[in-house]
Picture 1: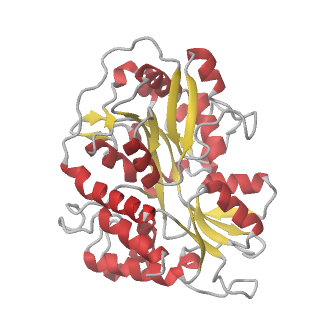
Picture 2 (picture 1 turned 30 degrees about the vertical axis):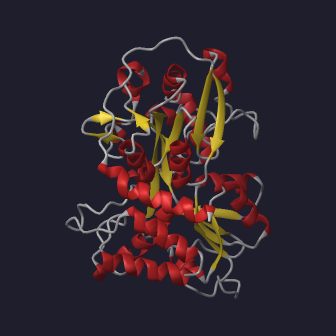
Picture 3 (picture 1 turned 90 degrees about the vertical axis):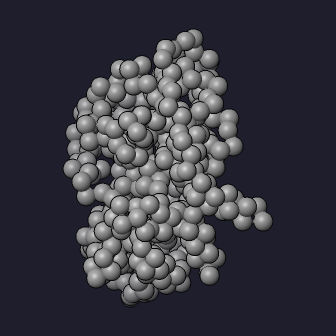
Length: 386
């Protein structure tokens, strides 16, 4: 019942949030720091050297500002929305499929960029992006961006797979065994867009123009593909570290994943590599947003500025396998190295289908798209075998 209530709550939020008028007043001046800061973040985004002492951008911030940081990691955008809805946090590193839900749900406040000098150094491609800017008002500061890649076991795949087909359709792999029970899919409902992207490229007759804007007929085709995939899936992953263990110990040989897991597996000497398939990839452009009722807004603004430091940007990108939102971050981090941004797909920005919240009043299909509330309930049903 608790899971059902959580799903219903998310569905209602996906339906109702966009009907509300977002807050429009931002902080005009900074005051004394409060001494603490509570952040919701993706795994690997806020590091203090506990996993590897070389990767620590929290401790210097704490020493510089006196703002002691605590972090709550989340495995999906829906979990982030749920946590922000509960309250008690100051910042969240939200992806594009959560940002507008938070804005229209009045869970985050506008951000005054004039109080954050580092915003002048942002990648122009991310300034005033539609996933955090509403009616000319900015509700956050870009943090990192990246792609959802196809990870594969190099002992099973002697040559890199070139299509998402390997995780969507049953087949015999190079080792003579089926992929059934050896692949994974992402836990979040936004994964429906991955199925839609695959169909958009392999079945153009369906007329899909945007994997997040689907007519009822297109949506049903995506669900059909995902129901068939259900028979192949070993696990729907939402814990990055658990997925690392599944590749290491549970026989998983292919899955959509983040570069973070690939980097971790390679650091652990596992036979894993990744590729961007020929159909392209979904991805995320993450934004640091401040809670509407933040108890520590001055420390929050200090962090927003700190997060745009080129070295910090480069170090985060090196650890997570993402890309800096400050171009200088590509050359300011010895951890990222000279080729880091190239390796992480920095040149592929225009090829990424960035996560965004599906809405009924869409553009690509004349305002007749399936809204996110349906994505939530239907994907949970698929995972349950229905």
